[in-house]
Image 1 (spheres, rainbow, N blue to C red):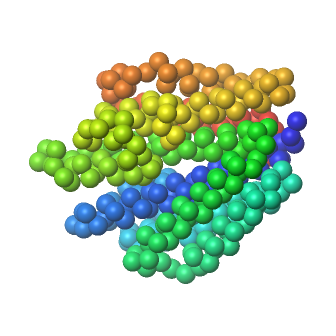
Image 2 (cartoon, rainbow, N blue to C red):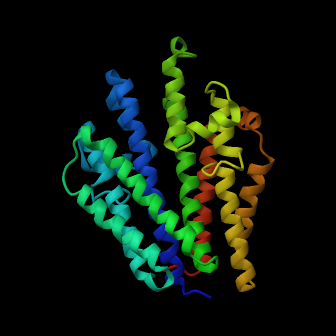
Length: 313
């Protein structure tokens, strides 16, 4: 059995890698939306802060809102523990702690990403340079994921990292869908217009799902279809159901390896059953916001139970 410290390092290493990519995607969408809604760009960037969970920390540091300070806070501010720079530094620190549990390729990809992004985020950012930088962040995190998947043995080391990645991913998808659903509800005059469609497309872009959505539905963007895709579609790699399924699978592997189950196994199974038994029509009828809020709470509780079960430091 892995030491709790090693298991924790793997879990948080991958949570931070996932969070860095998620933040870059959210900022990318904010940039796109601000360009199409120039008259309301500050409100869009404010919603980006809320989506990333950084709104409270930002308001504690800044008395007044500005687009420049919001971008800086999300990407390179070390006072924000979830900024891209903070995440990549935390990921490297955890990877260094569990260095002997990683393949050489995985460690080198993390270290190279840290060196590259530390240089790229060393100075305050200019908006014209943002698209190239965001592409670089997404590329570097993709290289880490690729090296990990192609070289790591599928054992408990792999499972703890996967659990961290998909707990983080589920939280991110639920928060984005909840925040964007409310903030992007258009006025009656905008329903069905190009602006309306672009706003809903922004939700899908933030989780890299805008193209695959059209493969499944081949129709114009509709709230109920987007919710169904991002919550219940078991083949969509950033959906809640897919992420929860991966967590359940990895926890089962740990149970098989160690011959023990814990409260977290049943909690994960209950969340999975809830998603499997739900329909998007019932979710909307009972309240999308309420469903997502409950999911976020249960997902956070699951993370705590996993840490307790496997003695994370």
